[in-house]
Image (cartoon, rainbow, N blue to C red; front, side):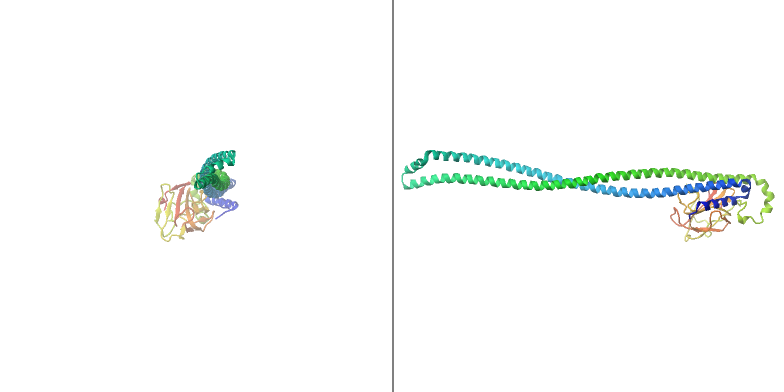
Length: 416
């Protein structure tokens, strides 16, 4: 339930004007208006801080989500870079093996070439000797044959020697060519592996660049999150100050009421006869009667959490209580009716009503599902002011009921 500042000031002024006639008669109207404006300013400050906190918390949630997503993205890139580096390392190992094989083939080629060169030298020597001797040498060998069979055998030997040398050279050349072909194949394999490795290197570098950008983005998000967290701490501190200022306003308000009531106690007796004939319904000269009505009729004594241990009131609950009528425990002026509480920055009370009963006594009714009164209204004891609900920081339908004396929460059991 939202209220504009102007309306709230009017209602607060009505609260103070209806608070006590005694206090009104003892306090200048200008001062009353000033104090009402002060309260409105304090409430506006709280509302502003609440909105800033909400916006900052939303920003924090978004930044945390972005940080989580960016962290996951970065880890994915890092995993891909590592996988690709492993593949590159594997290809490097293959290149090393191929280099070893190429070296072996080069050594084999060198050995085979040396053998060919040696055989060629021997062949050249024999051919040179035959050339120097001329045909006579070959003819002499044949003429010295003992018979025709010997002639044929010696002729065949000469042919065989020549044929052997030729075949040997041809065989060595073939082996040399085979080794060269094997080397060429290995070099082709090496080129293929090297090209694949180079492609992976380029891809890995692209991923590494993305990883660097992702890391920078993550650090930027983390910086923004840190700033938002610092702002949250700052807003929390400002909210605590605003809470304290508002609590002090109420303490001063109740103290001034008590002081005005005490200072006029001597004259109240003489005027009691004339004032008893009809002012109570308007809220004038209200004072606490000394007893209160149970705030949820039909659920008397249904307390599932009592006063104490950090709990400032009674939590009243029971079967079917949701929507049950809530009544004013005593007559008084509604000093707050809305979502949250005039003195609560975190809206944990949900829909809430605060009633001033005079003599520094006030009651609070929190977590309502709906309200039937507004700030500034005068209510009588037993009048319906709202309905039981589950709004605010509540985990089940119930009424949170407080009694406050001069702004300090006390045990409701002493009053109801």
